[in-house]
Figure 1 (cartoon, one colour):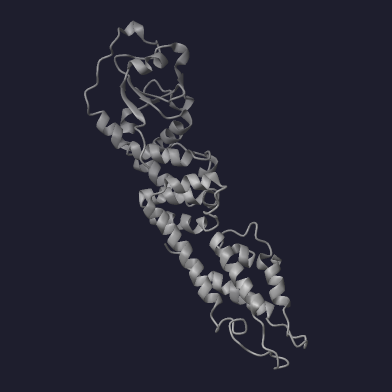
Figure 2 (cartoon, helix red, strand yellow; figure 1 turned 180 degrees about the horizontal axis):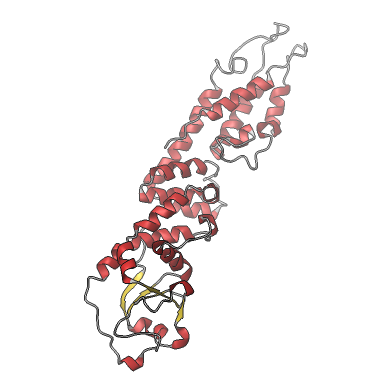
Length: 333
């Protein structure tokens, strides 16, 4: 998650003087406006924040290092500056961070409550705060957001981005959690630009992990469906159980197996096959599962060719075995 530096070091400088010198532009965030604090941070949208240097030093390795450096003298007389600024005391730091992200970050390091779960911060806001915390070497926001990443809402909305972030930081639990939820996504769909953009931003190592998990689930499911001990009628050359004369034509079962494997390759979770969630994940748009498929209808209506009326397959037993196969598929990367 490498990025450009979020900060321009000590101010005033030519680039930021225009924002800081005019009274009308000195808009302080109401939660960070105490004149007792002498570090002034400036957001990219002209909102300013007064912070105590002690808080910044304790929370951020970046500021701890910065405050050990000699501070430059202002390049202009005191009269040149806004009356809201104590030139002899205040230290200015200009950032390239929006006020929304900077406010969240400063609230976290200041111990202020944030009365919204992560998924209500904004679509990419948790990840942008993470990037800022990493750049400024601030472990507290990293820990707070790491715990919040275990939110089901976040995992449903963008599991691939969550997986990429967790992999970047080496957070194993969150990475596996996100990988499991990513099984709901058809990553081969070229029409989903957001998915493609996220995949393009992943490292080849992380992407390979996801692809290996998907491939293992597909191949193990295929082997499971082909097992004659589990599906004895469909995978064996046997006679009709009622008339004992005609051999059972397993053509419809073979077709159903192929479409199930193809569906699992598209959506490796398997909820669209069984018709409900798998281990608490997915299931929102999969009502009915394969029972709504024409291939399944043809399979479970197939009967003895001699006309004895015996159905080739026990629908309930077959569905139960399929469910067991989906539940047994691997989750680990």
